[in-house]
Image 1 (cartoon, helix red, strand yellow):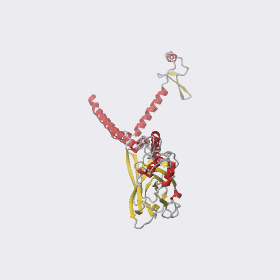
Image 2 (cartoon, helix red, strand yellow; image 1 turned 120 degrees about the vertical axis):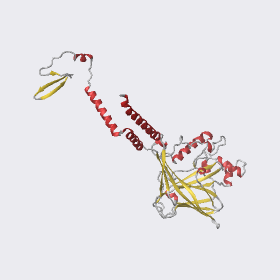
Image 3 (cartoon, rainbow, N blue to C red; image 1 turned 90 degrees about the horizontal axis):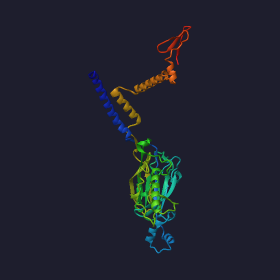
Image 4 (cartoon, rainbow, N blue to C red; image 1 turned 135 degrees about the vertical axis):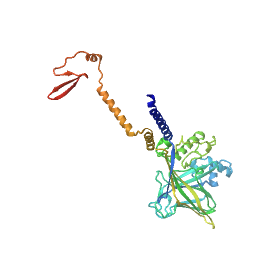
Length: 422
């Protein structure tokens, strides 16, 4: 008898081991929340326009410095050092280098409803901020054009538009300043951005080509632990800025040098009483403090043309050119989706045991029906007295007969009635 069932036992054992091995392997991938990256390459007709930030270094007039520090016997170099300890709202009133910047759209209908040569101020919010470069001890007054509060950047609708916009820069003497392009819903810290230094005495025409890169993470929080940041200004960058400011305010009572400051802030960038943290002391970029954004985009910029001045001109043109090639969208998706995992498990059951999900569901329904029927047919006695009544001889009415299963049958008008004894 044992030899007869031995082949069946070995087959069941082999199939069980194979099923366990396959399901374990695929479950390790699925519950490990592994991801993959799908790259979409597209050449869209309508392009989203980036924002642009221009940062001019402070260059306060000697008379202004003498007015601020008239009670102290300081040299001009010492006064420029003392400027870094002033509140930000006072810094915003100081003079910058003598450079005038005008941002304009270049072609007709570059933006929907925008005629030729309209200022950039008409199509987005212009934000002024103060930034401090701790490495060079340099304070800059930055102006951001085409900033958008919502995640709906301006769209270029004209195929004939070669440039997004142009800057006309006028400078009476040699100066240098900084320019960088970025996501319209964010403002970046100057040292952390892909900025370009422009020298007004050298360049007459500067052209950079920019392209947008989009990274989209899945909405399943357990896969990437991403966050939408819909209620945070500047999105994830705003979360990082808030964290840095909390650390700087707690340690030295000042505004963080790694965060663009509003022009009305009364805090200084530096403190005399305390040593402010260096950029390497911040840990705000970690995903535990500021999780990665579910959808983020940034712009990469490449210098393609820098024409040197051949005459003494006070005009420098800067053009942000639309990309020539493709835009890339990186979609991060689960390595194994839920539907794929369920199909894989079902295929494993079918390969090793010939079982499908319908077989499992029918089996469950049959077991449920049998359980319900057994509960209906089984009626336990309420007490011991009722149980003992069944053992006593009973007098049955006329026309009844007792069957072995304690059911009485009676024939009345050719209709059989069944009365179950209670």
